Image 1 (cartoon, rainbow, N blue to C red):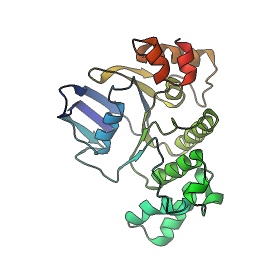
Image 2 (cartoon, one colour):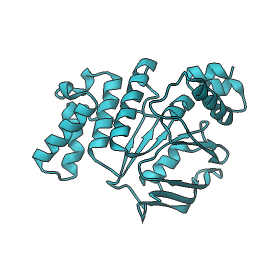
Image 3 (cartoon, helix red, strand yellow):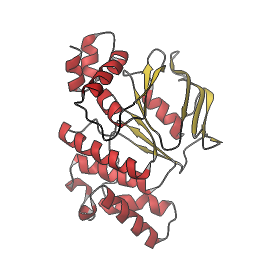
Image 4 (cartoon, one colour):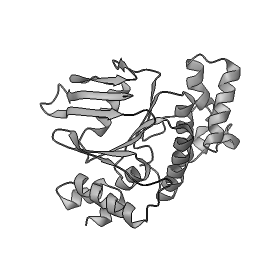
Length: 263
């Protein structure tokens, strides 16, 4: 098994509430796993533990046979905000991590060109960061993450701050990139539609404390049609598991289209 979480729990010292309790999960190499659940169920905390940015109170996390004790080059995190260096241009942002990894300069240039072309930004390589759109910034962040060629890509709601049109474009691009490279991805999202669109399996979490409620395999061939009746039916089924007890809160927490479904 490529990634294994063994009874992982997390208790923060400033509270008596367990953020995560007894999380066990196995992920195969090349799988695309989406994690959904209400706010406060520990989705981002779980990603931080796998990234090595925090440590479990109990349990263990094993990646490719080695236990995770801290950050490493075998894992890259892509956040909701692009977190680019504003004093560097588009290409320089991709080169930054490659330089830190010690690649020869000629190799750095080749890799940066490869991944900026992959996300369709090569023609913008010399643009300052403040001159590109939010969607383009996330594509730069994706190129930077892919360029490091890590074993595991961790994505924490990377498209949630963008407009619907841009989200649909980036979903298609990420799907295409994953099909080509089969990178192992764990993807946190509030959007059930997004989870069904991307996933091999959807991990549904519950809160108080954060725990795995269900793991649902997605049977549809790719590319997926979000308007197909089977897609819509499965989306509604999963949504019914993750919606909050108060319908008003649920409508606020999930994307507008899904909120409309549960009013």
